[in-house]
Length: 280
Image (cartoon, rainbow, N blue to C red; front, side):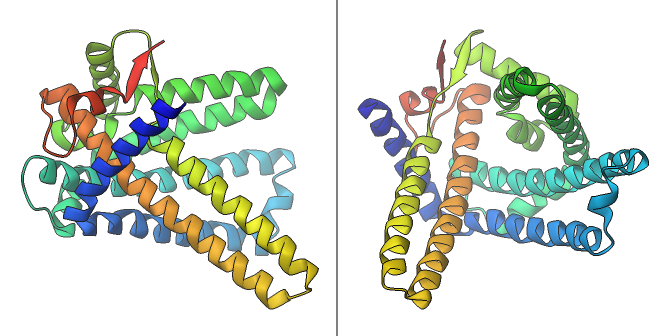
């Protein structure tokens, strides 16, 4: 466990070094988060005000609900993948020795928008199928959905940089991503904890501290203190999420360079990148 923490911390420091060189990279997750909130409100508020959620329990309403849900998934995935493409595109410029701007990242993503939309349709379809299995098949369905989700995430780990750099069709990009992983790490691989381990522990620490302070504040019956603590905790979670997303995009770019171009840079060592995956 200690070794994994050390490896994860080294990975965070390397990714953070790239972020320090190009602080504007964090703008892409920020814009993505704001856009997702706007889209969610645009879908959710009208549906709530018109009683659409109650109608979804009826036969025709279920079909319409599935259609609306699928469209919502597509819009969400498009926003997320577009922002990730811009982030990865800009990170690759930095890893190759350039000095990217926000405009450079957006130009990369815009150039591939049609392919990004096509991949969003595929990802939304997979997401809807896995969700349907999880909700309709009980415990077994939840297990199958979880395993399917892990396999999908593994196979598509390098899809975004493949789309950005190689301009393949969505299906070809998925196959290329899976092929790069097999070629570089072998047939039987699983993902390592990576960034998620450290940020998961940090999020847990924030949650525990928040709960402890809220309990102490409740004993003093200080509503103002409770509100302030919860507000600070929400901001802390948002900050961790934004930094984690940014560093993850940088790391994906580094892994792609190693797998597709057999290149590492001054930020990442070969051993560090190889730890993205391991043999089962």
